[in-house]
Image (cartoon, rainbow over all chains, first blue to last red; front, top):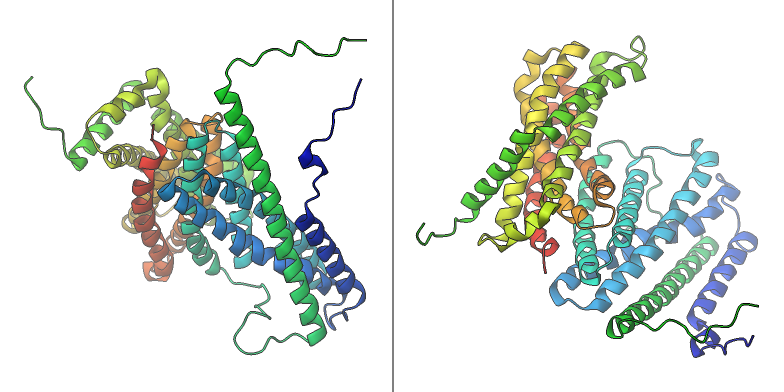
Length: 245
Length: 231
């Protein structure tokens, strides 16, 4: 048995992804060992360096990409837009899952409860459901064009849904900490924490871009393989298979 | 039969709705199932809570809206599922009517379906939960109609999409339920205000969300619908 020669792609290291992972690890090290703990919340506050950037990227960036590239797809019918939307949705689900896991971990020691039906939490949870529905929908359709159109429609409607869910859950009282960094005036965070926070933001954004790029490339390769199969009908059975020993 | 002018959008929509309702009326399968489901749900909800701990009046709004949501889904499943048999949808699409008319017709039939379920389920809940129905009937009907419009506009679109997937009816609740949140929440909240004897003015901000949702999603779903039917 000869081992197959590694294909060119297999030897290629995804440098962007490597750098992003290193940056995230560096952020963790800085957050854990070189950033002072918060006075009242103690060590629990450190989860903020994971939670806040993930939430921002998942809720605004990933969801925005899905909706905008969906709308553009319906207009331009470019396959690449569909791949971008699909990749953003998949990476977005991962980020949002991180948000939904780290949130309760922080909430238990600080709020005294794992979960509360607060406006922001509820909105995040429902957007997570919309994202999951989006991925399930994609998985349930085989035809490329149909899949792209349906998921684009769902992406656009999902964006329309956000203000409505937000409004209706906002009428319940909110308990979530108000923004401390992105608010008018100076951020009320000491410099050492602000630096760590900025670093976590950049590294998580970098990781998002790297994962998006990797996922996009995978989608492009899968599409290319499928297209190849469609152009070469009736593939020959592999007659040169190794004899069974 | 001489040359006939194809009907306008609304006339065509009415024809399609009549066709769907005729199918439903002759088979009665989905409507009957939705009614029986509603009655069963009313009974099960009553026993799922401790009736001595929770007031029936406090329980009723939630029960009503959960029932409407899921019985609505039962009807919405069939909306496009029924077109899959013998590829009836192809004939519908080949006919000289706008795609928007197909959507409006389907949505209209679904709306009447949901309103029909509500017309039977509301008195049933009032009967079993001992609600002061006559006092709140007018506003309650208004809320029910507003919510039904939102439910069927989103539900009709997703029913068309779900019918074309491998998961078919399994997919519809997964897609539609997150979109039902801004309908069920305001509807249940304002029903609760009504039933506890508060003036309707207290529920105004909820009702505004409901009206805005209806306007935005009826338009958006009618515009998005043609994209679900291409090729």
